[in-house]
Amino acid sequence: MNLDVSMYSIAIVAVRDRIDAYNAAELRDRLDQLLADGITRFVLDLTDVPFLDSAGMAVLVSLLKRARGAAGDVRLVWPKKEEAQRVLRLTRFDRVFEMVETPAAALKGF
Amino acid sequence: MTMSNPITVSLELPAAHRYLNIASACIEALVERIEDVPDREMVSYTIQLAVQETCANIVDHAYAAEEAGRIRIELALEGAPRQLSVEIYDAGRAFDPAQAREPDLENAQVRGYGLFLMNRLMDSVVYERLPGRNHWHLVKHL
Image 1 (tube, each protein chain N blue to C red):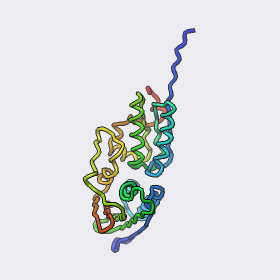
Image 2 (cartoon, rainbow over the protein chains, first blue to last red; image 1 turned 180 degrees about the vertical axis):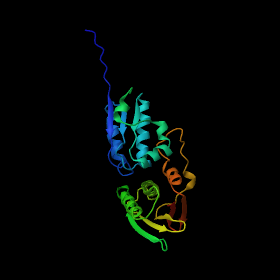
Image 3 (tube, helix red, strand yellow; image 1 turned 180 degrees about the horizontal axis):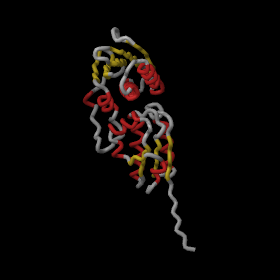
């Protein structure tokens, strides 16, 4: 039997709380654990994130740098809240990260 | 709400990240009560984020490892032109503007977006060192 099996490990992390200076450390710890487990490709689903500050954004950039350093990547699902989208545009994170509308879209070609 | 006299709200928080969401909730509740605010949710979020960034900087830098610090926040809704002004005071170390660099937006970085966001989101951001304390004055036109 001629089989061609490929296995991919992609973490889809849906965040549903504020990502701010208080809870950014917890998110960082969870992502660090996934990196330590060998995951290098991440989909961060920000759909339901109500508030994002610069400490939260620091977690996203830190993950991006480490993932890309390990030949992986990070894709972000747009928050549905327009105000949070604006912050990602102001800081041009929408150009640094590959932004997608849904987690399913993030998986295409990843 | 009448515009003839400023509507003021004050709160004082422990200088810890854990409690900064209280300021957000307070701002949200106040903006909800202001009549005829165009793009109300955006305005509310903008002020919340600017205050969050200011206070997070105070926790991390002005007070650094000091756990007993306090942050005083005074919100004032003023008329002609209608605006929400925010005064933020702390008794920590002085802020050094020379240490604050604009982020390189072409190359994402881990730090440096706080003051950038404050300046981009608010109509005015002014810092002054007072005897023994810091004062941030933020204004958003409504």
